[in-house]
Amino acid sequence: MSFIRSPAVPIESINPKVKNCEYAIRGEVFNYALRLQEELEKNPGSHPFDEIIYCNLGNPQALNQQPITFFRQVLALCEYPALLDSEETPKLFSSDAISRARQIRAMLSGKSTGAYSHSKGTKGLREMIAAGIALRDGYPANAEDIFLTDGVSSAVHMIMQLLIRSERDGILCPIPQYPLYSASIALHGGKLVPYELNEASGWGLEVFELKKRIDMAREDGKCVRALVVINPGNPTGQVLSESNQQEIVELCRKEGLVLLADEVYQENVYVKNKKFISFKRIARSLDYKEDEVALVSFQSISKGYYGECGKRGGYMELCGFSEDVKDQLYKVASVDLCSNTSGQILASLIMNPPQPGEESHELFLAEKEAILSSLARRAKALEDAFNSMEGVLCQKVEGAMYLFPRIKLPEKAIEAAKKVNMAPDTFYALKLLDDTGLVLVPGSGFGQAPNTWHVRTTILPEEHKIPAIVSRLKAFHESFMREFRD
Image (cartoon, rainbow, N blue to C red; front, side, top):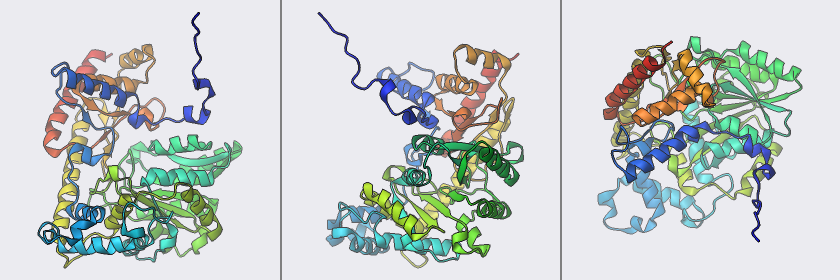
């Protein structure tokens, strides 16, 4: 006699918070792209394209962006300290990379990257980051307010654990938003309170919209704890003005909200009339008492011009938090012992790159400028391409690494998507992938205004490939619109 065994862990038995968690960037379209890539590898020529181009994720080095020489030299010397004693090393490494590596190794527990660090991160590295923050903002920073983390994702989860007590606790998030926030809020059992960015004004953040959403959530019995602001914007690419930031800080002060400032794209600003200003600098310039505004600012080694995604480094700086609350967050950090030391080192380097007069400074500036200027050209080329396509409107890309064009899909396409139980923008993205090998993310994965459809693409493919990508996009879109035109 045979028996049909039930699964040891049936899907009905798992934590419903996990089932409610979604992360579209590596969702349906991405998983289909992986299957297509396997088919191409097994059977070249089996599709109308010869490679999959992953425009779904801000992952620069996966698309052949080269690492910054100084950063990798310092890291190599820290990881393999025997190099520091080799007679050949001065021929291969710059003098300032060697001296920086010696300085960092002396800070590490056991002088080794293989040892656990303090749970907040190595103190000397936090001091280097604090010095970099102070230089950037013109206001002092304290190493004890900085937590080094395994990328910003880890930091966001820690803050959500701290703030969310029950499903009554709400976190204000922009729509469109980076799905890390909706996913982490779901995992920790809170409530996402959406506020819509104004696409017509270049994805503007309107404070009256924030106030309206706060009041509505409170009337619905929610306790609104925090406000997420992504500046420069992901997926929307806008850069906030100083006056707008001042309004946001003042709102948080009046409403008693923690301001969660996602500033990981602070180096990615592409237009001359815009500049990045940290929310910490804004808050300090308003002359509030330090505890009047609770602020958490996030920075990552994954973005900017460095693009060290795989090293999983980042930090958060806490301002306006009491010592007893910071002690509780330290306890949460201690559960994971510490973040990885390679990421910690790189976080210290991006906030303290080579300085004028040091051997690596000239090469560092050249590499940085080459990457950022190329990103600006790629952003403009893709923006122009989308705006030349029928029924597509793409707002100006001021910063970050993405475009979020709006596509007016024909009614026949929307009906075709419904027949296969699919969101129309997912339907569009999957057909685009099938025809061109380009991996874009449907706008529904980020949130969008009702009855509007978008896709998000990165600006990261190599610059020499952009013309071919534009040609594929235009040809596909023209064919799609012709097929489904009313």
